[in-house]
Length: 251
Image 1 (spheres, rainbow, N blue to C red):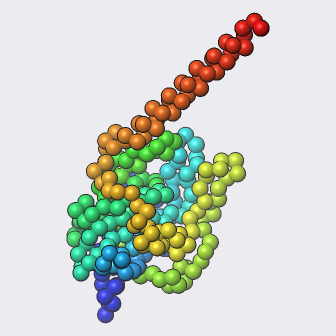
Image 2 (image 1 turned 90 degrees about the horizontal axis):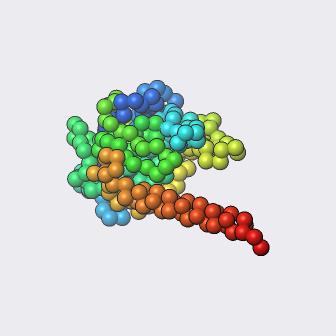
Image 3 (image 1 turned 60 degrees about the horizontal axis):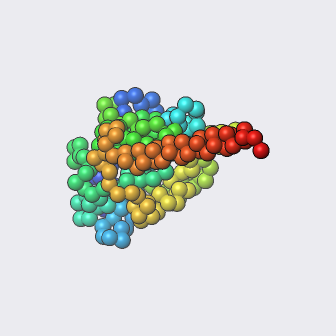
């Protein structure tokens, strides 16, 4: 018989919908069969946080025109707060951050919440679409036209299964000294403390932007930063020209 926690974890296990161009879809630990790795913890606001850790064998999204983002192993996370078997809110991991939305923004398939995984990066989104990101990071493409995966749930704890105790990175990728922003393979779920702590993960997430699913729709901060960078570059060039002309004046 399933425990109450195991029953809830099975009930809300997400449907993972890949981008049409995804080459490294959801998989399992030590297996090619996909799985979601789940745990339930009490939520301070009531109910429980249900965490679903998603493992992908490779992250092949580049940053700009150089290979500075690829790495073996990729752990992502979708987290839901549930009260009396009712979905209240969701927190989806997206690169180094996360997005927190109310239940109304969560799409359902077969009564399960949906995670749209972005091509290459596997960042998790609530709706299909394209998300703007700051240069040199490419936009996230999550068109929802790829493989649809409903994977079995494997319950995890700090010490179970045994691989949960391994502190080593999940892959052989290491940051390059020549390209400092190259990424290491990630550690396992427990060794990502700001995600493993469900309350911290939720508190650090940005407000919901689930409707920002087309290029240019919600990129005001990006445009402001770009305009500022252009203005600074123009100022620097103007100063350089003034100094050059001054150096040519007879003394």
